[in-house]
Image (cartoon, rainbow, N blue to C red; front, side, top):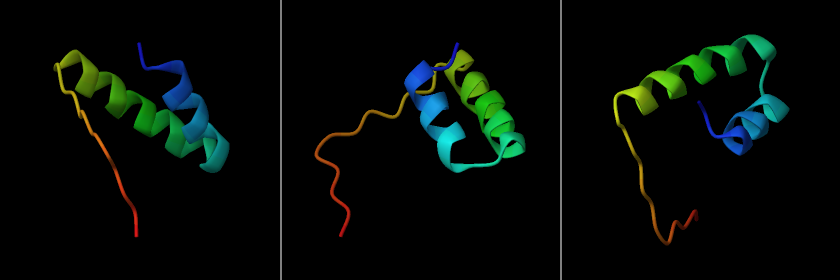
Length: 44
């Protein structure tokens, strides 16, 4: 299951079609054990 907060935030700023698409990708990555751990992210 995708983290509810991640999916809900994506749905707020994309189309329904894209949010469904990316939701499936996120679910597949999670099932594969993929993790993106980040720390101290800075955007300039």
